[in-house]
Length: 310
Ligand code: SF4
Image (cartoon, rainbow, N blue to C red):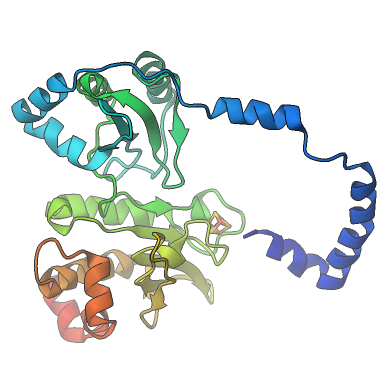
């Protein structure tokens, strides 16, 4: 959907319409209805696995004994509808790494873990992470220990460094700006400041052009990389929401140069920390309560810039 507009733009609407009108009757003539066998195959592929009884005690004991494990499970393990099971999200967002990248060795490890502990099921999420959807709680300490051996145990799912970033100018021929280094810069800075867990749930999403493959419109903080007379310029949107309370983010104002965008995001995060009334109030809740003005001030006021630069 994102890219068809380029085809339409290059060929013209009339040409595309004529191609569709030409093709449609041909297809309709040979369309024999939905392939029921294929449909049954697909349905079978999504059948729930044979869940087994699992004693969750070792999981809770490991949480009590190991604060690192506990912190990781707080962010990366979600409740499963079957008692005794958990959903494990493997972060491909190590701070400073390319979002969504994994090496061959890491993928082999994840495959082994899926086979051994996860009923042979691995999912790739739209957030550029991997999910083991069915893991007995008792096995999660072993999964975590194995993930640690290859740098896959980052506990940041849903946090500020769990950034969705499109390939941008590093790999995409359509890009107008870089995305990956911006994501790396933000995640690295957040790690330096050690504020990620204090900040809590925050979705930052980055696209390297208007095609919006990084879903920036629905990021709590969205970043869109544009080309302004041959120079990268990053537009920020706030208040986007991809949950059931869906919302499209609102533009803050003028964009930022490449070397200004990480400090700008930092100012937004500190503005949020100042504005929230209780630690549980999320970035999005604060934005919906106070609106754009205080965030705009944090972004654009000269004083705010100078303060942050100190
Ligand atoms: S949003 Fe990113 S991946 Fe999508 S077309 Fe633009 S630069 Fe390429």
